[in-house]
Length: 322
Ligand code: ADP
Ligand code: MG
Image 1 (cartoon, protein in one colour):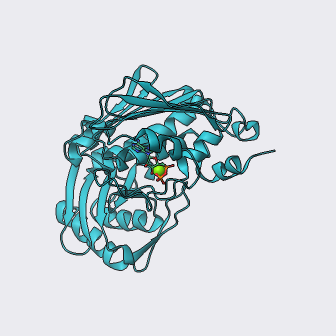
Image 2 (cartoon, protein in one colour):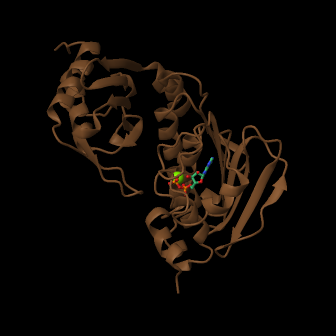
């Protein structure tokens, strides 16, 4: 029979990409400027995420893996470590319940690091270890103890593809942070960090696309900034739409069709642009379905956003000549 933690894990941890997402969000919450993700066999064999953030104290290492023990809402005593993305205190216990988890961490101002391992839901002793400042989480053999879940995993190539899409979106959402994704020793993606959106786009999509983009912007409400490709670099699917609201990647049919309408008033072909668009919006104006695996967004009123997208796109693309 499944333990309570294993059942709850189903909510947070569906596949390797969900583990990677939670670990990256923790790294971002810890104030990291460098996040390195390494996966083996599409993450099914092993996932390792290391960061240069604020670290976890040896005392907190123990409770970080206990369910609900570490909700960031309750643990705000460490002002150097600003938490925003996580709030449930559920990810690490959930991951620990369905894998072999190890955490190594060293606090910014500490001369020594500490490590803890969890196996079969039980954590071992905390031991001292030499390690750089920051945190490294290693997740081995995901779903080794829940074969029914393991059966739903796809091929390593498919799982890696999802992880690569995720890391790309993370890099586009935070150009200030350097992300590196490795497939064992092979570099899949590397963003420079400490830089602007154009550089992040270059890292994620390459020069051919980056060079063929126009910058769009809209001041006031809603604030819009981003890049949309010229017709010579369009794509045959909407897969290359990236929308971020207040820094978080979101999925939205309404934003997608608003962009398309605006784009096609100027670029009258049937193909789709590559688009990376950041919107700054009052949180009152939309609802996010906060299921950890989804980020579907519902707007109270899409029309001002649609209007702003239309104007910002039309102001940089010329009126088509017949
Ligand atoms: P949540 O992110 O919702 O608080 P998690 O289970 O993801 O819950 O993480 C538990 C706690 O462990 C976090 O609140 C944080 O205090 C700590 N933690 C996890 N990962 C890191 C990290 N990479 N750097 C610093 N602290 C971390
Ligand atoms: Mg978290």
